[in-house]
Length: 597
Image (cartoon, rainbow, N blue to C red; front, side, top):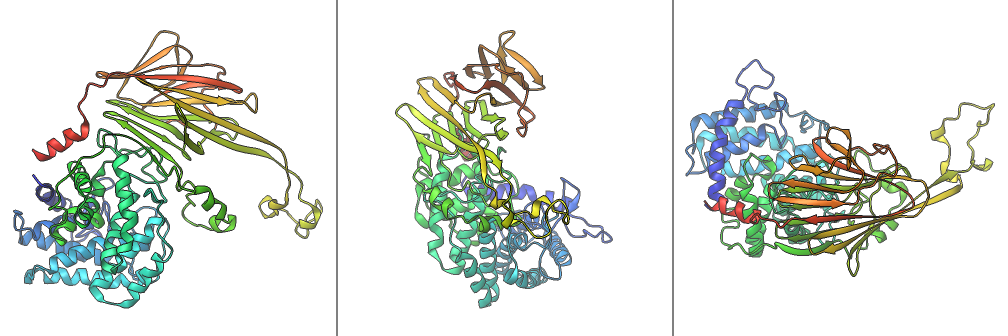
C-alpha cells in the first residue's frame, strides 16, 4: 500500500466519526460544530476542532475512490460546519481556540492554512451542489484578512504560520497587502541553526509546524530560499528517532517535553520535499511517518489534503535507507555564545507572552546502535536519556541545593574516551544601593518604597560563590560509565535521579533501596537491574550521603520508576551502566513492513 492509498483508507474510517460528533441540535450554540470528546465542546480551532473534521469530509468528497465521493449527506454536514465557523468568527476576523489564546491571530492563521486548502481543493471540483459551502468558506477567509494584516504572534513558529496564511489569502484574493505583510514577518530572518534546529527545539510539535508552513510560504510567495532551513531540519530529524519510531523529546523547549510523539506530523513535509529534491531518504522518512499516521491531524497539516491538492507529491521517489548506526553531534560547532553576547538584556526581557528561548542552539549528542538509542543534552533538566530495546531510561537529572533545583548542563564536548558535560553557576549577594541612585522620597521617613521599584542594577555583588559540575561519560563495550564531579562549595546536598518507564521491573537485593513514595526509591548501595522482557539495564553506584528525599524546586514525574542517589560535595562519583544483548529486531523495519502489508 503506498502512502496516498493508506491515507485514503484511514480517512474513510474517520468520516463517520466526525458525522456522529457533529452537533445537530438547532437550539445549541454549537449547532454544526463537531464536539471535542476531551471536553464536550465544539471549537473552531485547527487541532481538535471542527476544521479537522471538515478536512476529513472534504478529502472524502473529492476522492473518486472514496465511498463518500460527492456524498450529499456529507456535503450537507460540511455546509453546516462552514456556517458554524462563520458564527463563531469574531467581528475582527479572528477565532478563539478555546484554551489560553483568545481573539488569536496565530490560531486564526492555523485555521486559514487548512481552510484555504479545503477551499481550493473543493473549488476544483466544479460541483454545483458545493457552491453554497464554498461561498461560506470564502466568506470566512475574506473576513479573516483584517486580522492577518494587523495581528501579531506569541512564539517564533507563529511567524511562519501567519506567513503561510497570508500566502494562501493572497493566492485566493490577490490583495498585495497580504504579500507585503508576509514579507514583513519573513524579513525578521529564519531562526534555524546550520544543523537545522528551530528556536523552540520542539521535535514533537513545532519543528514540524515551521517546516510545513515554510514549504507553503515558499510556494505561495515564490521564495525558494525559505526551503533551506526546512531541508536541514528534515535531515536532522533522521537522527532524532528512537528505534520504536518515537521522536526524541527529552530536551524540548515546548509542551512536547518528555511526551510521546511519532513522526506523523512531518509526513506532508517529507512527502513534498522528497518530490522537490528527489531525495530517497526523505521518501523513506515519509514512509516511516505514514506508518505512524492513525488519527486525524491538524487541519493546517493534513497530509491527505496536501497530497490531493498537489498531486504526485513524493510518489515518484523510491525510498532509500535510513541511518540506524550513527554518532551525531547537533549544534556542536554552532557559535551560540556569540548570539547570547548580542542579547541585550532589555530586548529579550521585553518579550511578552512567551520566553526568550536562550537555549536555542545548545548542543545535543545522538548515538544509536541498532535498538540502543542514547541522547545527551544541554540546557535542560535532564542530561542523558537512553533506550535499550523495551527498557526506557527517560532521563538522568542532577539537582542540588546551590540554586536550588535541577542543574542544566551548559557545554558538551567529545573526549578521547567519550564525552564531557559541564555547568558553571554563580550565586552571591547584593550590597546597598548607593545614595545617588536612590529614588526621591525614599528612606525610613519617606514614602513607601516597594522593593520592585528600586534600581537593583546599581547594587554591587558580594561573596559570590561558583558552583561547577562536570559529568564525563566513558563508553564501554556493553554500556557506559558516568563520572560526576563537584568539588565546591563544600556541603552542598546533591541528588542524582534516574527516571525509568514504569512498564519495567526494578530488581535489587534487600537493603539496597529505601522507598520514598510510590515509584520513587533512594538507592543506597549495590547493583539494581531494570528489566522488561528480555531487555535489561544494570546500574551500580548507589550512594546515601544525606537523608533528603527530594531537592527543593526539583520534582519527579509520576507513573515512572525513579532511583535517587544522594551525594554531598565535594565528590567524584561513578555510576556504571551495563546493557543486555538486545534480542529484538529493529523497530522501524517492523513498522515499515506493517505499513506495506
